[in-house]
Length: 585
Image 1 (tube, rainbow, N blue to C red):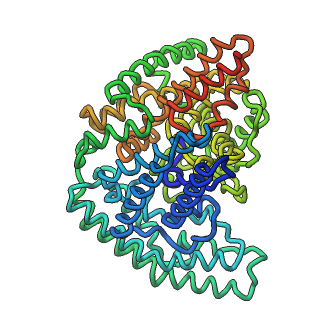
Image 2 (cartoon, helix red, strand yellow; image 1 turned 60 degrees about the horizontal axis):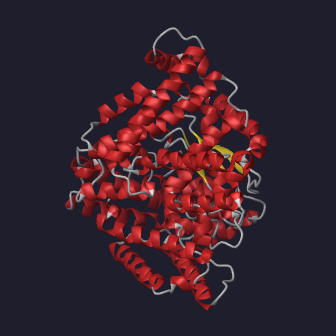
């Protein structure tokens, strides 16, 4: 899965663009508008700029005051009015596509405003208690970089004050996250309250300096950082922790369903439509999930028979979860094994694509402070200008619950040819507005990454039956999501009912399953996108193979899927149908 609060945040917000030259006056004006909106997005969301490798706003946080939120919402409404004033029919085909994509994004953003999601600024996978993670993507190559970070450190107490205002507004509106998730937060806040400033996560960049920072300045920078931690950051987190434990947590809702929020049914329907980029109802999505679960169980039974396991499928799952041979003994051994899997995958990419992205990727452990509460892995994209590689983050917490058989499918999904491959390929597309190169539609991106797990067969990577079982386990994981997400948020399922259904149908360990279910509770609808997107891409592949026959080449098809950049599924289908027609002609 791709992350992430951070990943989701900057990919959702990164929806504005810088242009190539356009063919006519209307096109030129449209591209100028794209550029202006891209710049507005960076100014309003400095963290997005940082993740994209733009250093101009590295000294500040997003303004979370109610006035600033209202101003951003008004600016989105004004942007849509400006966009709709353009004569779409006067544009060339490429610019019409860009127009349609931005219109979709702005319309959804404006529709979303009524649900006031900003009243829930904290969840178990991210929030002000984990904000220091952004330091992992900052350059820290010059004295200015360190002073920018000091400015952010100095502004952190104000950021926490703004978050508290939003949370109190949420309490007044009976709009809070479920308590079962919020019970995870106090420990995360407590991790920021340190006695020794040098042990603060905010201080990590000052533990070492590059040669480009003069030695004479290093001590002063360290001294200022320690002062800010001791006098500003720690007291601010201590006060935030007291507010959270004494005022907020006891008043959070005991229900877990999105439909229990204000306007909840309409909200969940909106989320399902937005994340899947379809008009499927939640009942239809639930039914697809049940069908997929039944299909994949049949394939799992075949693997169970192949390895001659004596026992039913439930017993086989327990065997896969518990037998020591399926696990590494230490976090270090687990990390080394992930490195080895990645190195095995890389040279096989030429079997499934002709165009290979230039941007490299690396492997990192998920930070210790969030590892117990987050999922198995996630991907962090590189900088748009190529100055920072992409990173595949893996969870090393409790290696005894991280099975070897999941590592191949997981790496194909998060790294290559999954998220890193698709996102980097989009960033490197020529003659494309920046908002199109950086945009992210969940059904497309996660659908591609799930589809990429099956590309391991074409790449010759599933020679071990247990690795094949891992692929089926991950496919089942996404099928189960359709059932439990809709079950939790629209059919009255309890948290335990969802956990039990997951455990009955997939061999993932209880640690992972519990974190996954809590993720679906805290991020309604997002989990629906994976399987819906994968099914559409697979359907388009089957259509292309049937119509092209011997002229079909998997490399050409995959390149065609990726050459649009991230788009709604309906747009992708039109593109592939046109591609098939052109190949036939």
